[in-house]
Image (cartoon, rainbow, N blue to C red):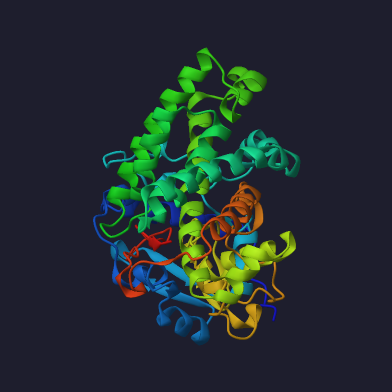
Length: 435
């Protein structure tokens, strides 16, 4: 089912005036203390797309999707924000870089735990800067590069499974497998050393936890950014073999330390905690679905790819896309937006939309015909650059885990698992398994 296109008002003189008014409104909001790095709570309306019941989005999210494609969220500071939950509508917004900006730096006052300088990488940047930065990292995420990386990922997975076995049954899958596999892979890709790996690992989960508002999140962002700035400065003196060293050797001073640290931060953000959550939650879902688990354990590579893609759709661990800011006054599926209004796209809600996913979207169905078209990695120019790396890791770790431990089972009842209650990246803090 296709959605009607969003209607955008042309940038006429009146439109430019409204854009100026939007910027004025944002300045007023900042004076009233909106700086997201200082907020210690999230309003109730903003929590719905971040909450879950087990591995499933809360029923309220589906209710919103049925009642209409766009919903206004009542937020403090008179901030006008809207939530999009339908699949077709979500794609339309995510693909519209002309109508929406992802640059959030105008919201930072500089007095909170993070500043505009701490916000970098591909997500919160617009073309042409986004185009230039993405071009710097894209060569390290090509299909050919992923094929060369596969043996290293297999070795990393084998070591993690050895550690799980050595820990003895029961053991925590998150600690021994789900966290170390993507962290080691990402740090190897970037060229970071073991000390950096440990610090980044500790900060990773904190930056996605919204239980205390966004202040803790941005505090972790700032701390991780400082670590990566130091790592880049060290490699500026002696470039390593990873992505950071390659960019320094090929680009020299054309790319600044701040830009390179922002890119590294974005890769860590998009490639560590998200994949760790998928490994843990994917295992949890498979342990509750013996037929799908058997397909992963004993099936062909194509079978494994189908299950992995369906797990990505079902879980959509990145719950909300980068916020979009309306560049001009426009109409979005019947809702009038002012310049500067915020649009939040619920990726988990869109991926459960039966108008796109078909019947029973809350079930794992490897035969579902939507393979590869889900929004777990986003959509448009901001689609995750490391999507194929995440797929590669999942295709390797899940079959290896189920083959090494064919009797793998949960060691506690599912309702006792420590799911994250309010998180931008959904996950579970521990997954005790018996084997």
